[in-house]
Amino acid sequence: MPLGNLAQIVINSVIMGSIYVLIAIGLTMVYRVLRFANFSHAELVTFGAYSAYMVNVSLGLDIAFGLIAAFILTGLLGIATDVLVFRRLRQKGSGTVSMMIASIGIGLVLRQSIQEIWGPDIRWYDLSVESYSVLGASVTDIEIAIVAVSIALIVLLHMMFTHTKLGKAMRGVSDNPQLAMASGIDTEKILLKVWFLGAGLAGAGGVFMGADTRLIPILGWEMLLPAFAVVIMGGIGSFYGAIIAAYLLGFAENFGVLLLSDLGLSTGYRSAIAFIVLILVLILRPGGIMGRRENNAAGLRS
Amino acid sequence: MLSVENISSGYGKMMVVQDVSIRVAQGEIVVIIGPNGCGKSTLMKTIFGLIRPASGRIFFREEDITGIAPFWLAAKGIGFVPQTDNVFQSLTVMENLEMGGYLSRHIDTAWVFDIFPVLKERRREKAGSLSGGERQMLAIARALMTSPDLLLLDEPSAGLAPRMVETLMGKIKEIRQSTSVLMIEQNAKSALGIADRGYIMVMGKKVYEGTSKEILGHKDIGRLYLGKK
Image (cartoon, rainbow over all chains, first blue to last red; front, side, top):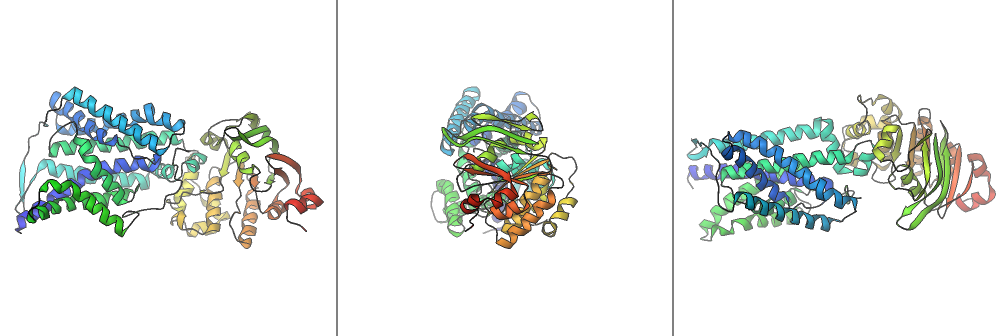
């Protein structure tokens, strides 16, 4: 294989991994505290993408402002879903399945609303793209920005989790909510901050996906299964596991597509790659890459 | 300091605790003993606001605290150490103490490390990697970080080796200088050894109360609950 092709695949893998990582971390953060799979996370991704569209295309501002707006607006939408739906279910003592089904419902409502507002047609951001050549492969400034911003966000999150009072409290609440309460931590308040960050990251992931490809109302929905695969592969609820798994999946998909075309198979099998990798990882490590023992299985819903 | 008045509490319609009243005075160590399933833990969870009582009132320093959320009670000066899951396993020892001191502006671990030197040695390790005894010490240390006026301990010696139980009781005696203690214990004899007074609960009801000496010396109680022949 020519070096240029190899470089291109590596670059594409890193870009894809950088998008997956933001979406998966948001998903895993909410899971860690509430212990349910939030299907409406997909639509938070889509909502983020379209919020940036509003700022970038409708208002005519730079996509950087779109990204900031997407993070904030999607973060607030995440809080709204909790306050309006999940918190009420929690207070009624609903189980994991009820929460999950409610999240599917929220997802449907959001997806259809987005389609109602922006229509089903494909849309694009207003970007002036500059292309560079690296080792015979081409990479755009947008793609460089995607990778740089993702890595910066991961580093910031790591610093927050390990060095700030809020970050440690978030870890404390997800580790043991009752004990966090006994320590004087207002767990509901911390939870809203987790929602804001988790949803905000999903929104940012949506903007990146939209900038790298295009905007459609099922943008997030298409990303949900790979995102779940990343979360499970990383070890459910594991922040660092999700980071490794996101990039692993990015590489597996891009090299897998190459393998498919070499074997003369349709690249339509691309979406199966995530699950093949997932299954392989789980056979080797049933708890995921950084799987941890489940403690306090009820989480905040107790 | 703490006054629990005619509390009935439980889960749904089942009243696990029935009309129980207990008191803890300033500087006292008080122990609640009784067989498994007698409602001791439920009573303690009710005091700490984790379960809302069906009837009765709870006063802390003359203030009605019935049904107040746990994190407010922590702010008011009540520390609680649950029987199980009483440390943040994925956090380091130091981070556990920081969580304990969440409400304070300034985290002062020196005095807690004075009482539990072993925690100082292991402060960078994950709490999940500690031994059973060390974990109980960390659990108590975490609760002490708010400098509580009253510490609620739910079976601190559960699952510990006999020698460790004695060490732990010694530590609890040490901390009474700064805080009153209400604890539940299966190791009734060791607990009564350091306690001032005790209550005995059976089937959700308080059946006896007295000084530790009275309880240890009582013929029937000794035979029924303390395993004396």
